[in-house]
Length: 193
Picture 1: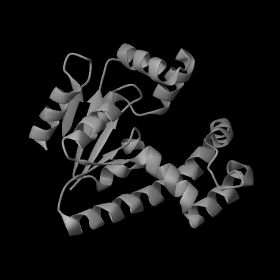
Picture 2: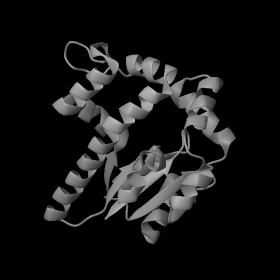
Picture 3: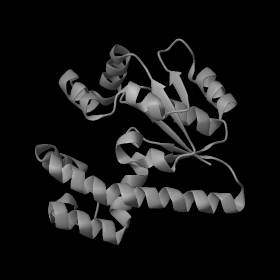
């Protein structure tokens, strides 16, 4: 079973993923895995360089996300083209990882992604968990964690799906407003999977 775990910036999705990991679930963090793929998959590297230029990587083929961000946020069509390279590679990696896991022991794979809806990855999930939180709490968490400005956080929020859109694709919706502990939320999720 593939389970999607999604939530916007500051929702606490990653804290819940860590809690589920401690309960024995296998977590696939799409952010770190996408970076790994962009640095190790020769086809993906070649396509990104062809699209955005060789300066997106350093001499050791380390992906320079700040260089890429400057390029793609100036030209949104480039972001769409970059996503068309990366998202299918991540999806293939998830499916490969899930198949390999099921050979050893059939346990769920939880795919953590802020852009599960936007990337289309929700389509390969058997269930989706959406993590919500009030906007003011999300902003406070993101500012504290990222040391970012309010305008940058709001820009990221506008670029992501809304809680309502995520809830429409989810079978389980949890509110991480601080009233319940992460452990309690994870126990609730575990009971409803």
